[in-house]
Image (cartoon, rainbow, N blue to C red; front, side):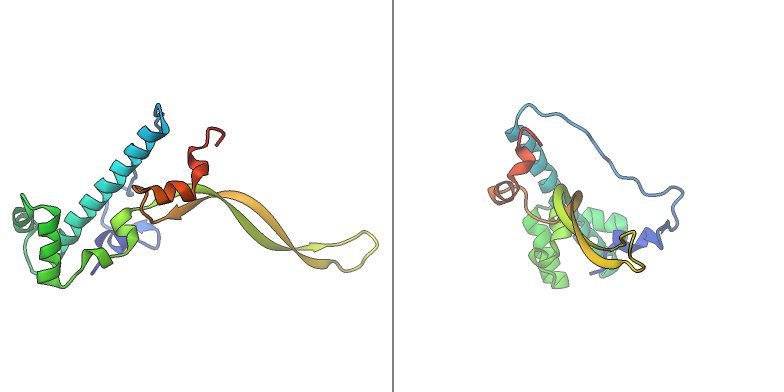
Length: 166
């Protein structure tokens, strides 16, 4: 299935057909407890899933069935997730559960320690030629993940996220 947002808005890093570059909503929040934070992030991921399911069906109705946006919106009005899944499967042979996680779960950025290996030339003052050596540095970088954060598995795998000292 075509991913409308993945290439339609940007090509070669420049927006196409837009008056402004695409923007993203970012927030900084302080929550009173780890459980409140987990609940908020779970809600955001569930919201991502709901929105993507709607958009997947909406654009399939437009691109593959030839409906207008108004007709597609009318067709989806009042439908539940099960209805949308049925439309995708019965009309477009799309099993939503087989769609890539990036679309179903969204993207979570977490700080992770990553080893970077680089080659450096080391030259002593008495030597004419330097020696090339591999040097490994550990850095903390934001890493994108496309996974379920609603269940406990994610939090058990990344306990450092909720550590008081992080």
